[in-house]
Image (cartoon, rainbow, N blue to C red; front, side, top):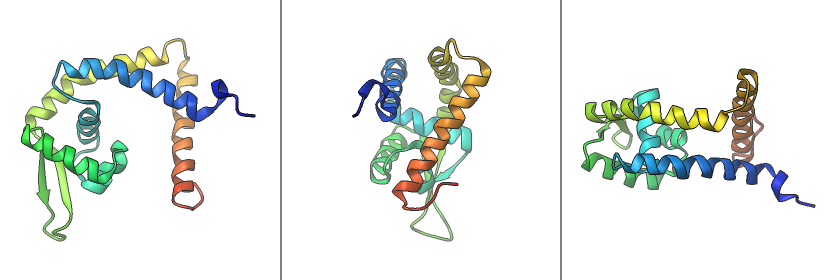
Length: 149
């Protein structure tokens, strides 16, 4: 029998939604949405990305991400550059203005992470992060019908 309050997908969704709802209010003050933030944070952390790789990093479906990148480009938050070797490939990068804005928001993002992890030891946090990465890998492997790393 399914015990909802102990069901891992339910617990993950509930925890993620709580953080997302609270942080979304903070982002609104900057005129940003949570998906925009995920793009900006990913690009700031990992550098310019091909659209497909950025889709994986942000967990935003490729066609949705393409439209979002278009909106962000209109707001001068990102640049899109076509690859010289592959005209179909697009690399996305942050503008200087967006990089500076991202740097201003990072402390707020870290504050929400700290609030979510309050009461956990450093060892527990490390285990939680490792387990979340493992869950992601397990499910990604299942979706691609191959064993996890």
